[in-house]
Length: 344
Ligand SMILES: *[C@@H]1O[C@H](CO)[C@@H](O)[C@H](O)[C@H]1NC(C)=O
Ligand SMILES: *[C@@H]1O[C@H](CO)[C@@H](O)[C@H](O)[C@H]1NC(C)=O
Image (cartoon, rainbow, N blue to C red; front, side):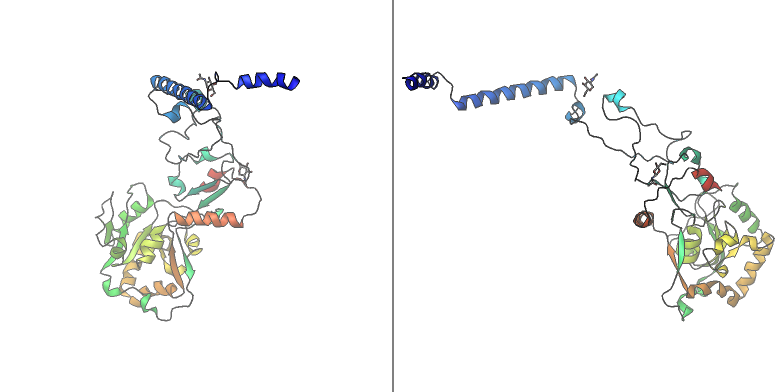
């Protein structure tokens, strides 16, 4: 009787008044649909903004955005402040600070000279760990060019010497940023009183570089004025490596000291303006070489043993950084006197 008594109500619950399972599913489905539609319409009423702005994916996860402004930060500003996204848009986890993994290295890369690298002091204070520049004492030394030994010295120098028959002109100069305050412009004004100097490029008295290109143009001259825009330690740019060496013109250099050049190129590969007491003496030496073919050709002897490498932007700085990281130990390093180091 006990089993019967307990069995009775069970059977009664299974009775016909209960809704079938399919109906429950249908009701749940429509309830969900209505609430979804209600939320949707209330939101599009609030704001026409698309979904991601209204409801950022929760929970917020920390992200790092690297904004690289220098040196294009704008006039009169040392840096752009990081905006306070919490206050502006109620975005949590966006505290304006630079959380920086201790093992991460920040590399300051620069190919301009100190004269053209303003406001460096704002980067002091141990912001960077390493430097990458043309300066030989950079952590990652990436020069504008370098000479590397040929695998076998060339005994047939014919290919190394330029065709003198093609060299109709004496002195060429290509300049794009013309400023009367630059030492190179002052030197040019004096030099052209003694010699004809053919100037190419925009911004100054130059004629446009012909369609045949810079190298073909310079190749038609015996000498090229590899004058740097400013004079600084190790600041020896494509004006020497590319415009003069690749084109096969003898460079007349105005830049750092002769000793500094000789760290990177043989002494008989170039003529330095400091080799002469005055501009007139340089001019007469160039005229002497113009008349003495064998003396002139001695400026190409180094090519038997060395070939020229030209810096390739920006893959080379990138790959050199990769290489430096591969060989670096764990020793931490920081640069707390960037400006003083670079400007010395
Ligand atoms: C800001 O966001 C938090 C968390 O997302 C929320 O609880 C709070 O109501 C929001 N405040 C305003 C003013 O919208
Ligand atoms: C990089 O510099 C930062 C800031 O000076 C310093 O805290 C960190 O230890 C340095 N990291 C390395 C790997 O040198």
